[in-house]
Image 1: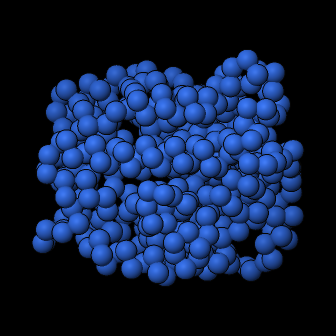
Image 2 (image 1 turned 120 degrees about the vertical axis):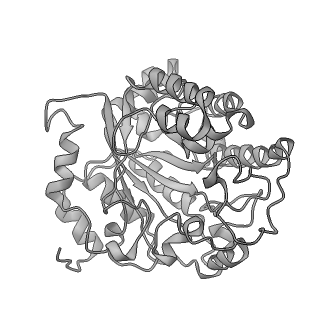
Length: 386
């Protein structure tokens, strides 16, 4: 398809439908208990009585959002699983941090674009499976703040979302980390570690008890995200197969309780579901159980966990994930001219938007994009999450 260069503000203006909500000002620590999150301003009365109920009511009407898959993998342009698929050693992959300069990452523009497209929330990969973080963390120096960029991209996006009344979700790789020394090994799940020909010296996990080091790291970072980035619309966990492989290692109920205690309005999802107590499910492309896949890979007992969670979640107001490019969620250079056009996107939206087509209303859509650093046409560089 043809690509024409236009000024980004002109592009947003042409899309029309601009909307901005009252901003929530000041540090979250000072304002959290006294103010209603800007994206929930129309549900202030319900929020005062029950923050979670207000958030669920908002989510049911939100229906369309933007999901940005962005990180070090964007530099290579071969998808977000490139470290795993190409078995890039940890030390070699880490060198990408010194190249991370997201000069064209513009949270103001991104949120204007989302509003112009009729979106009501955005999501960004705060930490993906490679463990690189787009936020400031005391638990890791493997972050955008410690890169040449010296920028907190989650923080920049949070400011704009509060200002414009957009809900902010944060993707967090809860059940997979290819860098952390104490994540579990490939013998339990092939996706747990890249298939290196030689042992990776950074990997120190030897027994189940070692996994506690990883959980301490995860909980520490989740507390940072909940404390430092304002009212969050949701935490979006991934990948669910990493959980199904070893559910005994993850204190999932403790994790959920911690999040709901720190920010009661923050919605929780974990793909098809880990416990069935998630606020919504977010399967990829089609809404279906993973129980049979889990049974073949991990056995009957773990398949029952997957089946029970999906049974509990399947009739909630859920989110369906899909990409704007052929398959990969992150930026893939070879797909630069293969993105969906507007007509095809509308067809997919028709499957979940009742005003476009009268079918199942129990779904929301979220659009994914990878705003690759240095690309003027950033809005073209990634996938749709529906």
